[in-house]
Image 1: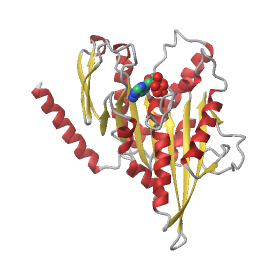
Image 2: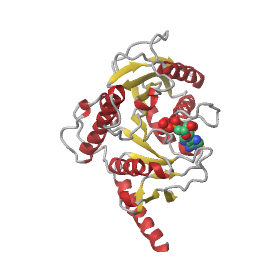
Image 3: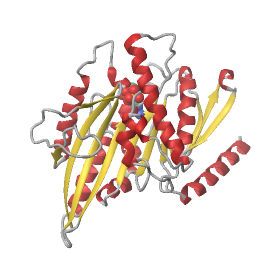
Image 4: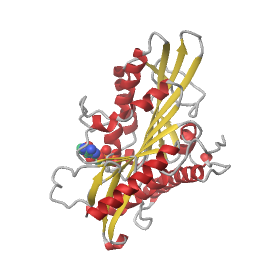
Length: 350
Ligand code: ADP
């Protein structure tokens, strides 16, 4: 076991050295706890610490321990506050005029919505990244009040079968804007309670079209975009920053022989957009002259946050159950590929 730990330590040291050198996408991994009634099961997670995680793979997936390194690994007992605690510099950079993208990836049921929004019965403690980010943003803006005047506005959209749906339409005081989703309402907000109100409306609109047997939220991407415009009160200059908070559709592969009709169509659209995301990331990693942002609505939407000066954080989610191990390994492999991207070095083709 000590030899094994030495290898992990060395992996981490090398990994951190490389990470320090480049403006890469940061990748955090979060392990969901067993849900109530499951605790007698054996976890597939053999070991995790700081930036390393090891999965016990059965023979079907090449028996043995598979280890992965990321910027950070959060175990099943990590709280929402702990998960958010490292993110303040990202929020600050939105107020400094940078574009930030935070997205949640993983199979359905692995905890993406829990991380981004929180559980169904929301309390202040269980609030996810979306609420906390906006809370921090308002708090920091207030601290800078003597030097900057900030205007904040949000959009909420859903991408389902490559169709973009505005989750905040019909809201008074909304205006149109010319960014990536010109048709989506842009609603000014000035406090966390404004945001909670809008997120509730967005959630309700998202549920329209879903039935008890067809919870479509796991098969659509949802995105809360926060636009910030700051005016420097000393010299009158303005800056703009934006933050995309994305809860991706479930990444699980669907057995084509088992689904037909609407389910098959949904699965094909999800595959297409997640592989378009993978392709964009791969071409950024290879510093290709052409980055294929246009291949899906998702990558089009995230274009200004994947590449150039943007700062990107991907939260990958995994489930501890043995039956999920195939998806867990493919999620971690995807995440490892993402972690090798140098954003600043890539040429961006808009
Ligand atoms: P996904 O969005 O990936 O489909 P969810 O966020 O809906 O998954 O999580 C599935 C279930 O697990 C939900 O009941 C959720 O409340 C619970 N859950 C997920 N992550 C955690 C966590 N870190 N702690 C406690 N419960 C969690």
